[in-house]
Amino acid sequence: MGQMLIVNYKKHCLRNNSRIHIFWGVSQADGPRVSAPRARGDSDPRKYVSGELFCNVSERHYRKMSCRGSILIESIVGISVSVIAMAGIFGLLSRSIAINKNLGQKLTATYLAAEGIEIVKSIIDANAANGRIWNEDVSAGNYEVVYDTALLPSAISGESDNPLLFDDSSGLYQYDSGTETQFLRTAKISDISSDEIEVVSEVVWTERGISKIVSLEDHFFNWR
Image 1 (tube, one colour):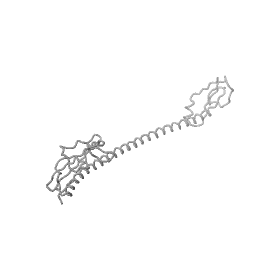
Image 2 (tube, one colour):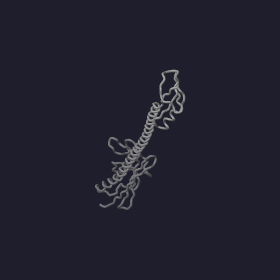
Image 3 (cartoon, helix red, strand yellow):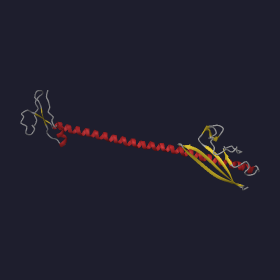
Image 4 (cartoon, helix red, strand yellow):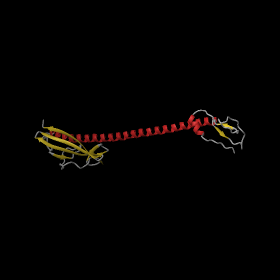
C-alpha cells in the first residue's frame, strides 16, 4: 500500500498559519500517480502530492478544536460562577429563615412578658372595682401567673423553672395542658412604698444554646 511521509506537517501548518505547500513523498506501489509541484530543491523524480489541501484542512480542524476548547472553558467558568451565586443565595435564605425564627421567638417572649404585667394589673383593678384595698392579695414575691389568674398563687423561690404550655385549640399559654414551650415566665412584685408597687415580668428562653431574656417593668400607684 502507499505510504505517506508526513514529517513536520503540523508544525509547518500551525506555525505559519497560511496556505503553504508541503510535500509528502508517495510510494508508487499502489494507486495511480498524481502530478503535483515538487518541493523546492528536491531532485527526486517521483511525483508528489501537494500538501496545500491538507494544510488548509488542518487549519480548519485546529480552529474548530480551538473553538471547542474555548466553549468548554467558558462553560466551566459559567457553571462555577452559577454554583457560587446559588451558594450565596441559599446562604442568604438560610440566614433569613433563622432571623425570622429568632424575631418570632422574641415577639412571643415580649407578648408573654406584657401579659404577665397585665395579669397583675387586672388583679389591682379588680380590687378597686370591688371596693377592696388597692393592693390586696398583691404581695411582694415571685409568681407564676397565667392569663386567667384572678388571685395570685403561692410565691416561688427564685426564677420559674416551669415552662409554659401552648394550647393549640385556644391559642393561649398556660400551665395545665398543651404543648411544652421553651418559655419560662416569672412575675416579680416589689413594694416601693405603701402607695406604689413595682412589677417586673421576665420571660427566659434558649436560642441556639444561648439564654435570652425579655424583661418589662411597670409601676402601679394608689391614685384612687
